[in-house]
Length: 268
Ligand code: ADP
Image (cartoon, rainbow, N blue to C red; front, side):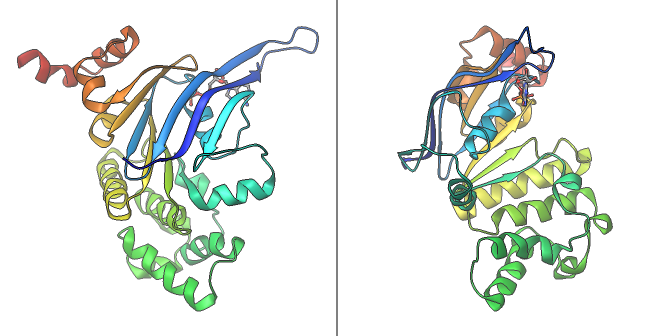
């Protein structure tokens, strides 16, 4: 198995609680000693209820949040500074697909401009190379070339998420972090977007981190699963081991809230 692209070792993130006052500060341990690895060609699911620390973990993985303590390694090198330059470098290695493409995309940018933008910011290629890459990207995410001239408001939710995925791929990253990428979409297009992400991961040998509160979705998509509760990883292993023999009480509770998953085991 390949070496991890990103590794978190005993990472803690402590926020000042939103209801804290100047004289009585209170803190939230959003991450409380999290260790995990993200590798190329592998999908890691991070699952847990709202408030369990999933998004904070995602922010640390993309270098947007600095740990209060612990180590973040990129390509085996510990990340020491969190300067704009370091974040730019990470931005080429790790891309994010957010929950709601309607807010993630700039309403005044056409698909072409949204896809050109990351390449221009990172000074990738000349204008002919970029134009060629834009056409490749829309093909890769299954959009017609005619979508290049469209603005987000002229596209459906599923098409917008395809544009957001194409944009995430523009710089040829090694890792994609997908934070609840289908929860703002119509149920009818969710499976298409999940299939697209899985196909892209396989074709491009990407590493993927798939964040979800829905343990059912995660099961079919992920090689490994980390179950989070109150800022800690309470269970971490292959998807099969987590689902077939969950060792943690909290994981069993999550699974029992999704009865269809238990059915095959009940009858086997
Ligand atoms: P999840 O993605 O699983 O819903 P989050 O990572 O968003 O969880 O949040 C974990 C905890 O940290 C929650 O208790 C949340 O209220 C708190 N939290 C997240 N971001 C901040 C912030 N910027 N300031 C204060 N508390 C925060």
